[in-house]
Image 1: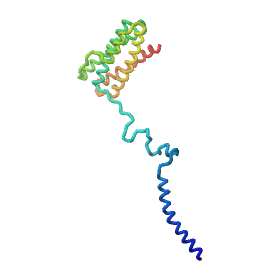
Image 2: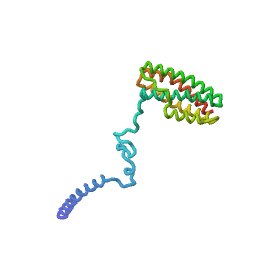
Image 3: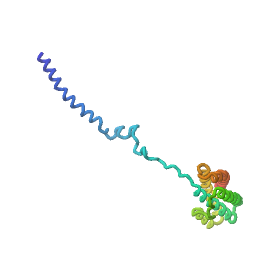
Image 4: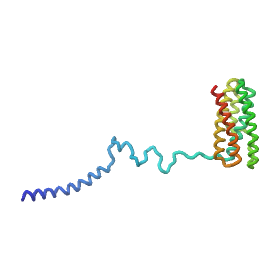
Length: 206
């Protein structure tokens, strides 16, 4: 009987120690895992990774809409560049294919200029001055400085770049333009510009 009571008392003495040990173990389980463990190397599925944008940030700003004034200015300069650079090609080119392409550019872009003037008048928008923009003027000046085969190569490259930009501009405005009359013009001229791009792409690869 005495042995039983002693054992019972000894067991009771162990209870406080077990109770105090439990919080310590819980505290250890909530500390950060050691470096090198899987949970320390990678974030949990519910937490954002270090390289991902936060919930309040945006990965990319939306593309800005082309206004009618910007469209008119860029389209007019591009169209004038096509005419003047192609007239220069008719004078300087040594290639029959390049001259044939240049002749089409002069005819088509003179027609485009006429259609643009008509559309601007119908939309009650003042026509921009017949002057090349700074970028187009620089490209034209570079062409004037070239001679022979170097001119043909520079002209074709300039025409390719100009039509890539023109197709992008006219397609964008035809879809999202802010003036109905100019949107209709952009949609009307876009197939012609795409045709020019296809033609000059073939010249460029030949």
